[in-house]
Length: 311
Length: 318
Image 1 (cartoon, rainbow over the protein chains, first blue to last red):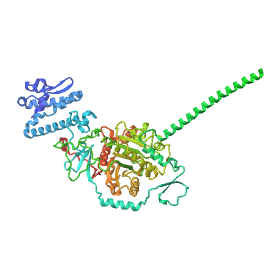
Image 2: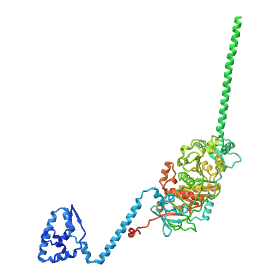
Image 3: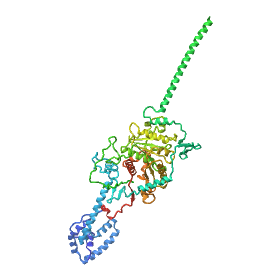
Image 4: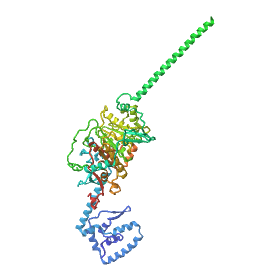
């Protein structure tokens, strides 16, 4: 018996054998605008099958088989699109297969469609959350960085201190947490007071140190009443340290504690400048006086000289 | 790494607790709290004010100045008045990190010489008016040793008795080494924060410095472990924080993860804690500042683990 499928599809190339019912099926596979369009299956399957079975006969089968060979020979010379079309046509329609095993097919179909739906929905949600405008104010409020009560965008913060951090997602068992894409586990501190005391004793034995109170230049003599452990030697060419103590300590302390008024050195310089100006002014006055005074005396002398000569 | 402090009475809270938590105390009216993460309460200041804290390490380049700048600004942002002192006589760089290098006109040397008053040498940060910077000296000046420590003690006393009130925190950025600069910096301090990195050279220097601090009478010493790489710890290429604690025997103030944003923030003169959104290192600094205020220490650290393997049904959200 010829297969039902070959009978149906070969009717495309043997139009004189096509019944009206098969023609309906043929129209399901049409080439429109160079593309193969698959329309929805019509529900007239039963009708088509019946038509096909009625027309089946041995003679026709042989003719069909020869036709099949002729068709097969023809495909080699046809273009890829037609070849693809024929390949598709040769595939058994899913609906007909499904009709054989109704219950399991239905279950498989249902589970596949459910899985596909869940994946699509999840991808949509993830994409939507990813493509929120990054760094926007709303994003900051959502993450808990900014107050929301002034904006009315999201609910107010519900934690008291920085250690209940919304960026840190605590796991159900409270021992693991997820942060910035990494998973962390809490490891408690194991240092006890006794261990701290042991470390302190160790250090006190290892590092015997006295605060240096005397800073001497290399080569200087240590004063007699000074503990050598409290002496710190400074090289003479040290770039940022000097042992020369040019500053009066009491004066320096007063300068640090001064709260108001002109600082000491500025005032001292100002006073010095003032004195200098006054001195300069006095000197100029004196010089001016002397100059004029001498001229007057010279004038008087000349007058006397002239008088004497006249006389 | 961020940390959680589970006290015996408080359980880990779920992400969205059912009850609304009301604030325990009203916010300070002087300055509104504008920390990066908006909390419902302010940390409770413990200890006597002003709290004079020296930030030291021994080894150079471990992050003392970065810690001083970030913790200081975090404290200022929480509403406390802070004065940060750069005690490095020859190599001053706290002003660079804070972006205030163009505003430093006078230093403590000028104050000692009488060229200016102490309040004229303090540089107020324009971003946070309750944060001030004081530099010891300019790079080319020489400070007479012998009364460097005395001078800093006078400065701290003068800050306590100033007209606008004593600051809550005085942070002293200590220079590297255990030389005269170190001695100057630790003289007026009551507490110390030891900054270290998870490598053996830094740990040895840190141990030595801790010994010197204890000899000098400073007992309240807490540790900040900087530049932590959790991936290297997981691969056992780096010591874990617990190993470091076992070696040094000090309480943990904070664990700061390695962050490339530190270099960018240094270049910009914009400390890490001011970034929005915050980086992990910035959040860790903020938490360390919180613990410093409350004189608390970490009770647990986070250890990176392998992520959960996603099974077949993970497609369905499992």
